[in-house]
Length: 509
Image (cartoon, rainbow, N blue to C red; front, side, top):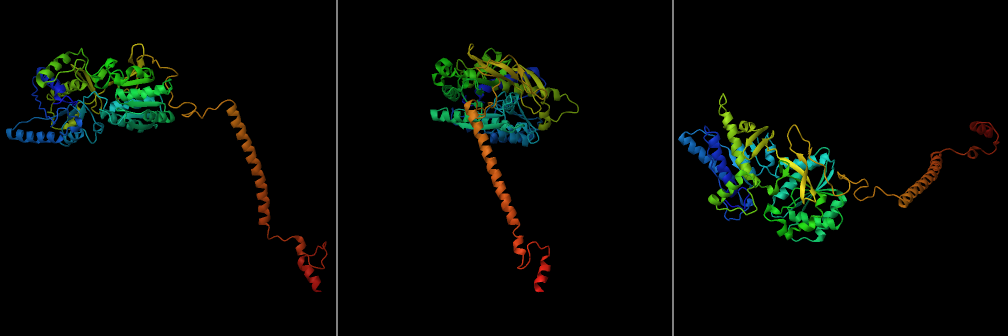
């Protein structure tokens, strides 16, 4: 129930209720009901890490089976998980074990990509915590031939999702073929941090890469970028790839002009050295991962949150994207159910794996937009890559990426405006990270002469040694050969042609 939790009913409750009303209107022959299984939270400010709801889901399911068997009811069950929870994988395992579809609308997990082990999993989530989003960084590195990358993340910030996301990105990069060298650098930058810590990260960056993927909130990102500017590492020869729109503070709850602690005005000088990889809609970045203010559901859901769940949205905050995804989840399920109920022979809705396969490679029309699922049951997002336009003071998309089985390429929207230097920035400079491959002028000549002189000296010494060794080897190998003077006996003339034995006979006579 708490608004501190991503999937709290204050956000998704109105979305599910609107969806149920639309299902009853659009599909009157379907008998659809929904039950909220609310995790136990002792405090109103509880966070995701406090949730353990997989046991509650199992208890509900088995109690309902007993109840329905007693009353002779025949129906099928699907689990929808709208928010964040460490129980996500536990619920997915449970649903898969009882062969029921588990559809997530707020988060996803790597289980979803393993269809041999988890065939019943689906997701309508539009989130950066997904394999599809992680893969975008791999495609970007391959597109620009970046073979060495550093992944930096916040290890102790307000949102543990950044660390999870960065780990996923690093794993995807490291498993690529051809090989991409990915250095993983977690650091605590949200709280007070010294220049030595920042310089330590930047020293390692300068010594090993030119491409940094920085996955963190605006605050730690700005701190590191400011220090990079102090060191002159914003000259266009370094690229900082971000997943956070720097002009929007954490959670979109504060504006730039009242967020001096985020150091926007100081950091924005370095933004032209950054590119942004973010979720998009209609070729525009989605700010704060929230629904557009103009969407018809926004005003209605805000009113429902206040009336039914005693929650009032802040003035500049809109319902989150996963509220729209939660609405879509119920509409998508209803569309498939309405199609399959007319199938002959009758479809077996209790076969979760078979039911899940009916969602693959399809696009569903809903009031919150088209929902496209790939061959794994993952939602296909629109992902944009943007540069910072200093004149407009915002990130402008210059490439679009919408992954599917038939298309893994980027679509160019407009030319990139890079701060300085060449684009794309090479993965490694021609002279190497330390600049030692390119030495010119007098130093180069001196090194050449030194090398040549050393070679001449070594060759001369080698020749002398070889001659000495050869002579010494000859003498040592001929030690058994007696010199002629030692073969002459007393009384034998030196010019005699007689053999040694003949001379012996003469002496005896």
